[in-house]
Length: 344
Image (cartoon, rainbow, N blue to C red):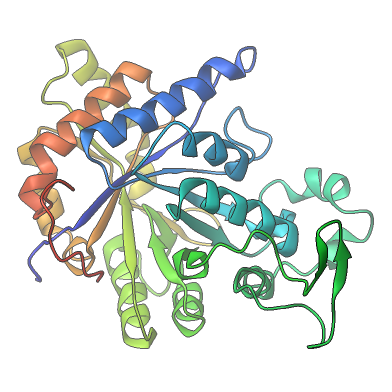
């Protein structure tokens, strides 16, 4: 088993809020990003979720986060591309990246997006079932971000400031290299590798010829690493240390993990979805589990996936315990202590 050597640690916030008070919840998530930066986390990520009391527009939220943080990288994990215009989304993401001074990471997914039967008729004018939901939409987004001029070499447009050659504005140099694909199958891992995308792995994957989560994810990672010309991978796990929590909070965390344990015992649904076990316990117990995880040993970037149902003070305790007690034991050093952060 490869030794664990994590160079980059991040966290993924669910961005939840009460239906009757969305401002308070969004503000708490912004404050959590500010805390993550103070604690020394390398990146902070949000999900884009539709029809839920969560962040429905990752680009809008992260634009706000650019003005509340200074150094921490900001990420989306993930934006379902099916509901998006690859050109308009590229404009939004470029704007966020410019505002952040190059700190944005964009995670994407293709395929029929969630809640399509409800949202399809609202997002598209007509014939939404015949819409292209393939990887091609992700490729188009990447192409738009490359900053190539549009039209023939002699194509110009007139603007108030004069005549210019048209291209997507603003152009965010380097953003296309910070595009990630949310991999959960051999097909998606292979596609990400062939098309030059970084690979996001999480605590959910597809069971392909195996009922074992770690075996399935190890196969996907192996395919990606063998096929990508410049591989960069990041792994997400639900990690909940409770070293500094009181007894009541510890019991809440344990009960949370127990309520989700049954789903980890066998494939779920027609797609044979597999779930990793939540890592809840003392730092020593969590480190033991991480050292035994064959996927952790092959990546250099680790992302805490924070549970949906917890309170602000619980998120703060989890982030503090992890960065102080667990991350250094995985080989991570504070950004104040430079090292060669080569990506695995």
